Amino acid sequence: MSDVNALVSNVAVSSRVRLARNINGYTFPVKAGAERLAEIIKPVYNELSKIGNFKLYLMKDKNSVEAHALKEEHLISADLIQNTTSGAAIISDDKTISVMVNEEDHIREQCLLRGFNLMAAYNNIDRIDDILSKKLSFAFDKELGYLTSCPTNVGAGMRASVMLFLPAITMNNSINAIINAVGKMGMTIRGVYGEGSDAEGYMYQVSNQVSLGLSEFDIIKNVEGTVLKICEAEQNARKQMLENDPYGVKDMVYRAYGILTSCIKINSAEFMKLIAYIKLGAALGLLRINDEHVLDELINKMQPANITLAAGRNLSANERDIYRADCCAKLLGELVDKKSIKR
Amino acid sequence: MLCSECKVNPATIHITNIVNGVKKEMHICAECAKKYENLGGFKFVNDDFFMPLLSFGIDDSVIKLKACPTCGTRISDFNKSGYLGCADCYSAFGDNLRAVIKRVQGSLKHVGKIPMDDSEMSQIREYERLQAELKKAVEEERYEDAAKIRDKLRKIR
Image (cartoon, rainbow over all chains, first blue to last red; front, side, top):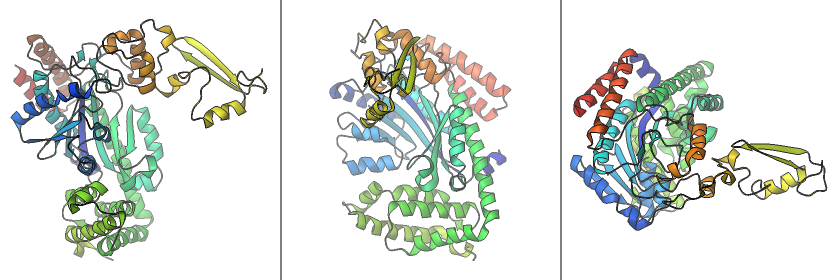
């Protein structure tokens, strides 16, 4: 297990399992009327409220900034935001469980946990699924499994994904070969904040493509295996990078720290690039961060909708850049142990 | 051979497409190919000609039943959007849809979780399935997983 921990450390950011479910007697969201679909929200919310503290977010009541802020935190999807008539999200207070109602399917249950933790994420969401399935009659066929709006999800209706921080294999250009190889294994890898090798912040998401003919445990095992292979490639590339050009890497990391702690304004793209260098620097032992998780949260907090929400009013792009620089300088000043920076 | 579109230039691009065993061939010139590309997509015979390459592509000419009796979704709707209208579409579009599923998922047999409604039958089936999963996890020395599966089995019992 310690080998696994060493491999995924500073690479696997978060793990997510999502289950797609539909309810018998209702046409799928793409076809059904808003009034009929809205009937689904209440029973789901009622059941979840019995087991914990959940908050209900109706897309019709949310202004787009609040909805987009939830999306930036990976709690809801862009498609759900589009459904301003019957779309809803029911999210646990600790934000680990999010149930979307009337997205592509009637119900999308997800559990999102920090680090490399797919099995725990599955167990949590499996429990939620059991609770909902006792109350709602899920569309299920004994041959094809859970019936979904898109046949690519039919079967287990499950996507298991891990968010990975892959700066070294992106910079040495081996990411495209890895994307191809992963595709052949029935998995998919895509940029979290952009596509392919342009993935902003070097953040990628690896997930299963196939959901039929495999049990939930098999799907998790396959994704875990793929993730470990990618982590190994990333760790090797990081070592190589430091060996090949130690001064170049150090310069890149400390320069990023310098800019982020002293700039007066910074746009999202530059912020994402430089914060990734800080993360990489911490992974390579070039600087010490007091709490890695706070750094990951900072990335979410610095996205446009979250900034607008925190500021409490609509900001111009220029004002947003000033706000971002200010927050970032303060937080990084606290997060990075200055004594760990050695020229 | 002359281009089947403009009937002026020689055909230099030959496309063969097989959908559910039905072969369609196209012979066109580079100019016509470019023209269609510029229009935002190839449109040689009909709207759905290239669909089999692009998305799910069930050839609706070979299907007698064209609309789902429950929700009215047509095969052509599914070909365009990739979405089915309701759970009954799966039986309405029968073997043709199964062929698509087989192609994109590589299987037609669900082996995963069964919904936990309160019926005794569903609980027995889920219990048996989890027992098999437990055995597999132990064989593969995934003891943490095995412990979690065992917890779940206890709950059902």
